Length: 190
Image (tube, rainbow, N blue to C red; front, side, top):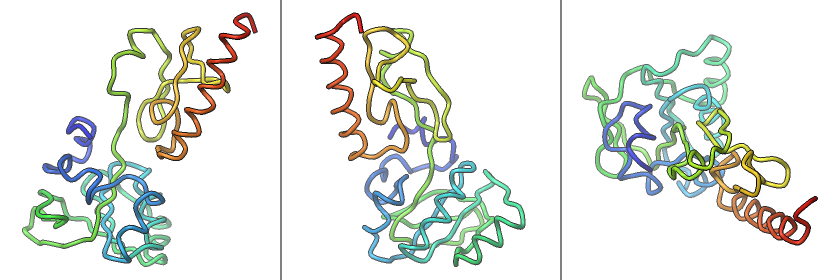
């Protein structure tokens, strides 16, 4: 994950840990943490969603990190779910997953979740003038039901064209897009 995508957190040292100890999807990685301590670093409203889901997989601390303010009802809901809320600012991540705050406190976790702003890394969609849409997690290529983009004859699938981002959903999306591409070649006028 490029630093530019993770820069919305303002925290150094996330990219080299991405996919190893820092993740975005509770369903893909929550169970892997063996009920260890879990951190959620706020980047926006999707972070609340992560903090609500993750207590199922371990003790969860939600770092607001100056990126988000939560109202009383949200705070009460999180506390009811067993989430600890931390208002301090994060300086950096050290070691495997040690969160170091600007006040020099250190907290160790089995894993960290954050909701980065994603967008396709390839310029191809822009070059082909494919319509992009804003989603809660960033930008993606717009597709219709057949996975065809706004550029006729151009199809997109997987993480660049659907949310949530998941390998299994991307594979299914690719199978559907492949079938639709074949169909468009067999019956080009339909």
